[in-house]
Image 1 (cartoon, rainbow, N blue to C red):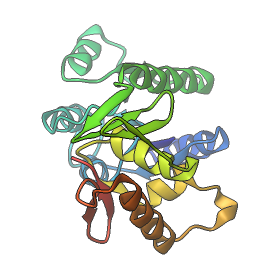
Image 2: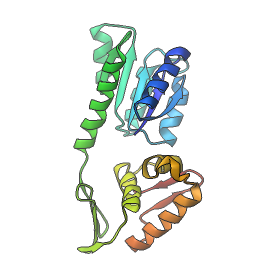
Image 3: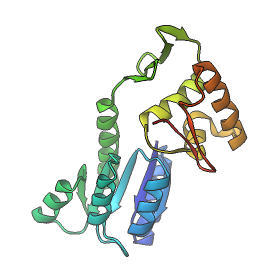
Length: 218
């Protein structure tokens, strides 16, 4: 699971990154709204922890722009303002949850887990692309009704692309989610597995290259 932390307070930013990583998350950390929008445009995240009072572009506007892009990544907003008006505004523009500073780390972790769990259960578990059907629960793939033999590694890659359909899944994201860190995967390793996956699916056009960044499925 990968999380983007957007917080301009350097000490809090570093603390959140460290704690999230200790709890098994991969974390990118940025310090202003412009950086947040660039990262969310380029990379896939399972959740975003977004402060409201940010340099350049505030958190409300960041959230609004993200939703205008039809990006439904879960967003947990952080603020020092404990007012109903601010909470309502954040939720109305598309935030999924709201946490007031100062907060307990255990509550933050619980809210992040709840967001990710909720979104995961909402996603369709049987997906059809052209004549290919993927059952994400049973981890099975069919083409024209015929079962295709696929390894767990290749299914993991396919699942990441499907769950982020229409978005670019980076090399780094695939390596983080489908390989153990002790495997020391490289971009060439990912490319070789994508080539094999295309061969099994018998359709190389389903998985599109995004030059220098990663892959996507429309």
